[in-house]
Length: 568
Image 1 (cartoon, rainbow, N blue to C red):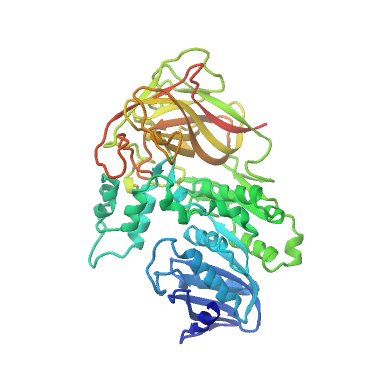
Image 2 (image 1 turned 90 degrees about the horizontal axis):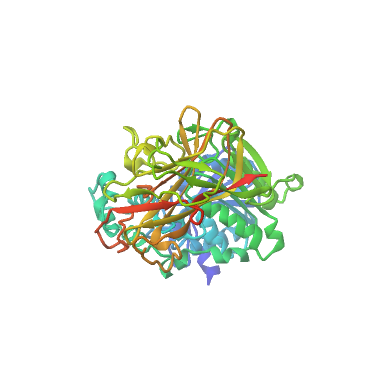
């Protein structure tokens, strides 16, 4: 059946030559007859070569410069508009067709006379996810991939600790969903505050069924099954280059994908052919030095194309010179001292989980309070710290300024001082460090907490405080109380009952310099990067809210702490 489908490929009328490089636009039909606009870049003098494929919803024609670079490096480059985007036929249903469409496209490529039979895929974010989706379909000819900053579970792409990345998915779908003629988005500052969550699309200005669906399925149940590939990764026999930054909302997913492939892949050769590049970037600054308000120096600048070229020369072209060069499985950047390190795995060896305890005399509110952070565990009872979490007055994810309204909250590092002056933020600060403190691995906060409402969020930030007072966030996490034990089976909080919870702050490597201080901030929201908790536990179809009094305990038997993998 498929053999007859692929003879339907049609050539565009306009072929454009750039020296020895020719571009050819074709319409590649999928198994259901939908045709996808596809550009092929190749050197007319090269009869056959391995192929680099990029499938994108963001306009394939913008890849002209990249395509020419790949051709000059000895490859054929293929760029394709995903289904329902730009010049491709069909209707976009985010991610739902990408596995099959990827398979069909790769099968078409390998049938072309100019293809050597070996295909690699490249790209990040959505363009990275389609690589995993194609890979788990096991298309003949797909040899290696380079997924940058992306997921293998779409649920984990959108949710962390039960809280949804509200501004991320709302903004993306508002820009990628067909809207009625003349419709203009409402003020996103107001739209993102709409409750219930099921009405956020209408608050933006028009119906967005996919947004409504994503916001109203907060548990990783069957709704998400088709877009959960994680259990299928170990069956892959495929080298993969994983690139991501600590401040990227995909950091946990990308690092997790590497760990699965390196440690759980059924094929021993595949386990040895994984590489992780972990830098100080957010989603839009991969390979750059300036992220948020912080310049990490020239060492943070990375040529991702050069890294990919080496990867595909090694695994796709099978170039002896590339194969002969030793490369470490992990290369990670330490923030603060701004130095790259090599390691055999993640978390890197040589680091030991070390607790830094939260201490106070009941007055940890604001950075001017009595909250302390040190390695000495409490030996008796200490007063409890409390703060109010009011859904009508959420703590912003980052300080609001004239040029950065609430809706423009960023994931990268910015000065947290203004937020630390709020009474609804608990702040615990170490003494001035007398020697540098280095750590690398996955950071956690283990807290003893209670609330007087059926639900509540605990948002935690790890902060590097400079001598001038600048407070740089270096790791962040959030946990919704009703999901403390299970994401699949939420249970309300009992009034006043004390729970031990673990908040995942993600992968991080940093050196806190001598003269700096280490700090932990705790509050009830990171809005609008994550949705506010209504504190009612009534779910996404209910608009009611409660103000929650949240408590954090620190005593000999309830020792709240941050756990850092410290260098030994």
